[in-house]
Image 1: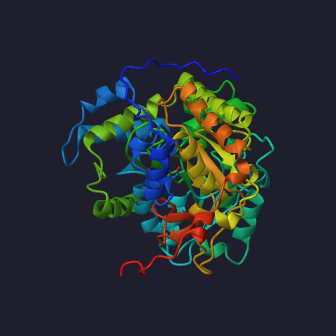
Image 2: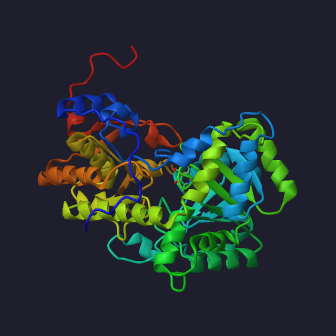
Image 3: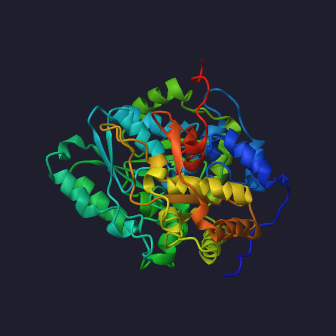
Length: 472
Ligand SMILES: Cc1ncc(COP(=O)(O)O)c(C=O)c1O
C-alpha cells in the first residue's frame, strides 16, 4: 500500500529528540517498566493514544482567540451548544473537562448498587465509573469480534441475541440503560453498523430501557458506515451521524477524539429536562458551572469548530487510510494484526505475535516494553493489565485477546514516521524468543495500567534479594 496523501500541509513543527538504546533502557526501568510512566521527551513516536493528542487546524487555533472566559453564560458556550445541536441533534448539553468527566456526571446520576450495564464492549474508564458505584459492566461483543484473523465489516457490533437474553432473564430488571460505544475502542476500534444500532435500540425500547451511546469516535464510525454498509455510499456524512444517534436517549463524548480538541467532553440528552437539571447539578460539583464544565471558553470554541471539521470527507479518508497503512506495514514486519484495522488504531495481537509468553506474564505489556526499547515507540496494552482484577474474586481478568494498541494521533505524524513502528517490530521479531514476560509488583485498585510497576520476569528471579526490607 502506498502512503496516503495528506489533505493538509504543515505550518508549525515540534522537534523530536533522538534517544539511544541505553537511554531508553534506563528510562523504562526508572518508569517501572510501564510506558505510561515515561517522560514524553524520551519517546520518539508516541502512539500511546489518539486522545487529546491531535493537531488542531488553523480554524481551531483562530477560534481559540474568540474564547469568552465569562464564568457564566459565555458566547463560547453558546457556540459549543449550537455545534452539538447542529451536528448531533441534542439540545441539552453538559460540558465536562473530558470524556471520563462526562461519565462521572452521567453515571453518578444513573448507577445504583447492583445495576447491570450491558454494552458492545465497555471502555476502561466507562467500566471503572460503573464499577466504583457498585454497578456491573457487561460486554456483549459479536462472536466475530473475538476472531482477530477474520475480516468482517462491523466487528464493533453488539450481540443482540445476548442482550435480549439478559433483558428477558432474571437480571433484566437490574438494567436501566443499554450502551453502545462507537467505534468500539475496547473491541479493537471496530465500527458499529447502523443496522446494529437500530437493532439494539429496538430491543432496549421494547424492554423500556434507555439507550446511551459513547460517541467518542462518531465521525470515524460514520465514515465506515458510508464505506461498508449497504445503501449509505451516497448518503452525506452529517446525515449518517444523525442516523447513528437518532435512537439514543443520551450521548457521552470525549472531545479529545472526534472533536479533534486537546481537552473536553460532554453529556448530551434529548428531552428530559428534569434529568438534564440533575446532570447539571452533578456537573457543578465536579466539573464546574454548567456553561463551562471544567473547560476554558477557548476550549469550548475549539470543540465547536472540531465537531464540524471532523466530518470533512478528505480528512476522514486520509485518517482511515493512514491507520490502514500502519496496519499493513506491521503485518509486513511480521506482527499478527487484528483484522480489519480499526478507525483510530492498529491492534497487534500480542498473544499470537509472542506465543511463548503466557497470559499471566502479560504478553501485550511485554511487547509494549520491547517496542519502546527497540524504537522509542510508545503504545498501549489492551490486555490483562488493563482488564484489572475481578472485583469479586480479586483474580486477574484475562480478556479473550492480549492486544497492543498503536493509536494514531489525528493529523500529527506522517506515514513515513508511522513506518518506524513497523521497523521496530521487525527488529523485535528477529529475536522473538528473547522477549520476556513481566511480573506485576505494584498496582492501584482501579485503572491500574496507568501507574502499575512491573519487573521483567527473569531479571526479577535472578536479582539478589534486597539486604533491607523496602522502606526500612
Ligand atoms: C470509547 C471511549 N470512551 C471514553 C473515553 C474517556 O475519555 P477521556 O480520555 O476524554 O476521559 C475514551 C478515551 O480514551 C474512549 O476511547
